[in-house]
Image 1: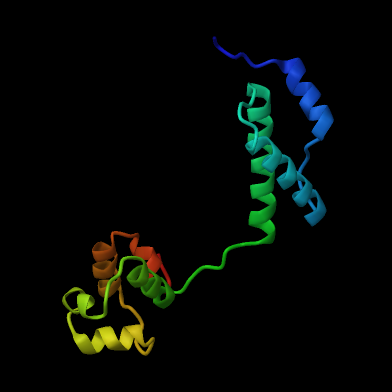
Image 2: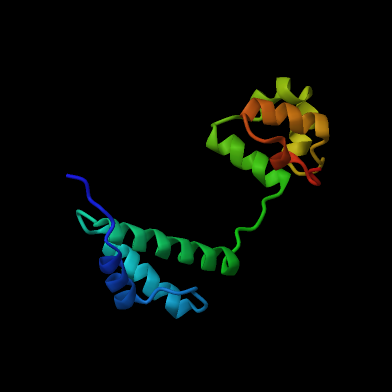
Length: 136
């Protein structure tokens, strides 16, 4: 059985929930509550899936504008990558080339230069821009 999209049913859902661009915290909380209700249903109709996708898009837009994720520094990114991949300072000696330089970078006494950033990016398999202060 193929479920087809029913415009009348979707129109009824839109009339019931009246989704719109979210501009306040209260509207965001209301949209989140609707999303949670839809997500807990065992079988969504195509119309409910469309409404869910619309609401998630509206919530995401509101939260990106009102709760931006701060950009990390190269130093904080390096520490995060080390922790996430269980890498020690000693593991980076061969990557960066010198224990002293590794210690100074880890202690945030020395910035990561372009060559070091590229070597670290290759080692961690990430975009080099994450480890550069002014990526160009």
